[in-house]
Amino acid sequence: MIGKPAGRRRNRLLSAGLAGAVGVLTAAGVLAVTSSADAAADCANGYVGLTYDDGPNPSNTTNLLNALRSAGVRATMFNVGQNAAANPGLVSAQASAGMWIGNHSYTHPHMLTLSQAQMSSELSRTQTAIQNGGGGTPKLFRPPYGETNATLQSAASALGLRTLTWDVDSQDWNGASTAQIVQAASTLSNGQTILMHDQYATTVAAIPQIAAGLRNRGLCAGMISPSTGRAVAPDGTPPTTGPTTPPPGGTCTTTYAEGQKWSDRFNGQVTVSGTNNWVVTVTLQSPQKIIATWNASVSWSSATVMTARPNGNGNTFGFTVQHGGNWAWPSLSCRVG
Image (cartoon, rainbow, N blue to C red; front, side, top):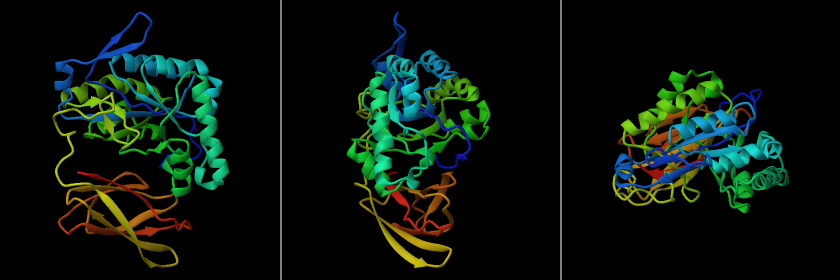
């Protein structure tokens, strides 16, 4: 994951929850989610994705599932393959609790240091481990440390996986308190996802407050669409009313143009077409960092993930990347704002 020190624990679990539907625990302990007019109204401002990396973890996954179920929220778990293979019962428990399960590689390596064959092995072995545990066939892949490129995305696509990073980093891996995690979640808007982790007590303790905060803002925790990478209603469709209806302005596509190069840095230029109301996510590869930008309003969700929006200077913006020896172009994703 981007921003997470390599020495940190490498096991993770992705979770995208549904908070606005009515959650009922059955006698078997499975979260049964039912729809109602009231629930639909509660989701008037759309859906967000709560994601938890690093599982399944024998010391904390059960606590996490219990907290999610008690709050009436569903989640998508991005599992590390070796953890899933070692704890198939926890994979089954995730699925039985109504959670979605994603692929987070088998050993949590820096994937970009691997050959394409090794990348494919990391992904395919994780698919098998999750399937063997009763978790179904994942459709989403979160790259360790958020590090990705075209080769890795191609390997993921070959297995039917969409590569997904995040919009908001809770910083739970970096010692964030429960209050700080709740505050990070309060910045989520329709369609966005937040990065959290399986193994921290502070993260589990934040769940009731996160669920309450979403309800107060007319948001629900939803599933992450494999086709768009955005949080949507749990049946895979956006709500019929409210901001999840795509706003006017057309589609959103980006074109990257390489700019001037120096020994330690290079310029890049992005042109957006299809809409004047765009949000472009620029993802770098460590140790790269952006040291200058122009013609856009920018914010940061981690050291290597920048979000750019129009600032009145048209639909072309640029940036300078200090490459640190990595000359790879940044990856881009675009959505209508």
